[in-house]
Image 1 (cartoon, rainbow, N blue to C red):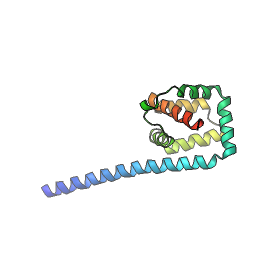
Image 2: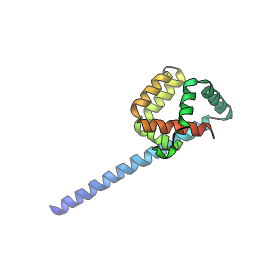
Image 3: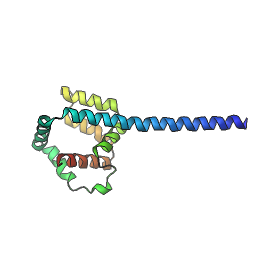
Image 4: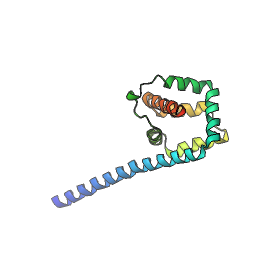
Length: 139
């Protein structure tokens, strides 16, 4: 009986460890694929268009100027890869793809996207996203 319990405990620990490894590496792979897709679709012409949109949108300018004053040492993440992982974990890949599709179709507003994202992230994570945006725009 004792041997059976020991074997069962070992199998259970191995299953939990392998499940965590699959989840951890799965989110890393998903975030890398999303970053690759975004970078491949943003050629120089599209990047100029995105930057001009950002420069002409007062709300985005407010976010970017606010991010300039943030101390990066206090943030939970500082890179776009880490930001992508957090978004995948908190929002989910399927929901992010739905948001992308709705944004392309024009069936979701900026305010709806912001309110949904803000509802799922902490204040520190939102500040970190602002910082990553600021850093990426000022490369």
